[in-house]
Length: 240
Image (cartoon, one colour):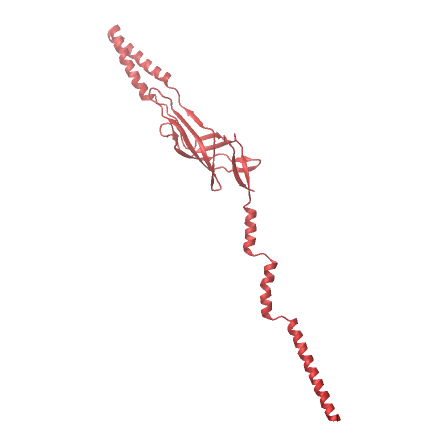
């Protein structure tokens, strides 16, 4: 090979080597530096793995604040209420429903199980009006349910029984007094015969007076305080 051809050959080899080296360097740069689209695609995955989503956080917090535990109120616990409406032996009937409010909270070991002013429902068990000459008034009621945090729970309590006065003695005084006054007036008017007639008339007047005034009905106005006792226990979930 003559010197001129050799020189040209060496120059071509050097140029080819330089071109190969340049191409190799560009390829390494592309692999080292990710594109903008690659960064955008990687970012959401990284963020989702780094922190929980908003609904997951909300669900976790809600579970913490809404946790409850069941608390059992034992039998014989006193339930103090005030009536929200009036009841009477003359106006109420067995089976009638009535409303009341809790006068004192039910607290167990420092935990309020049933708050004060909770809505309470009751039922009339028995109601008998007073008669004019005989028959004693009677009113018997019980509690049936209580509302706590918007949910109703059945109650099983003793009955609160109210019995009127026996008016037999009062009627006897009224009728006897009427007969005595009639006999006195009749005796003054016409002697013994007049006394007998006056006594009969006076007795009739006394009986009418007893019939007019002898009724002794029971009346429990609104705001009347009453106390009941649980006959069986009740379990209520309480927020912890």
